[in-house]
Length: 119
Image 1 (cartoon, rainbow, N blue to C red):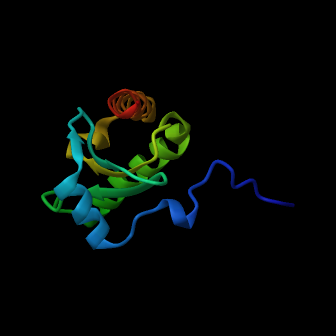
Image 2 (image 1 turned 135 degrees about the vertical axis):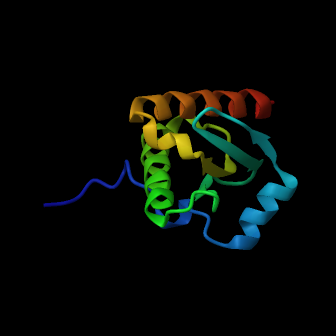
């Protein structure tokens, strides 16, 4: 029994180094959304980091926000055609959102980034 990992996130697709995330915030572009915000820089490959603000007091809630973002991104990552390093920052109200709402905003953000960065 083999597991199909084509729809997952590979280890090299995830940004883990704080220096890289800081560089994206300092040098990148930023889009605000209803459920989450996106900071990004155009790069050689598509990579992503998931975050939730520390203003959300409970770690359980922060972790749930990151899981929701990860799932929405995983399902919609093919829409991000521009190779970019993304940081997705979840808002507290994302906990009341349905996955379809998040996927819709993810598609919208992908379209904005693709349009802005297309030649």
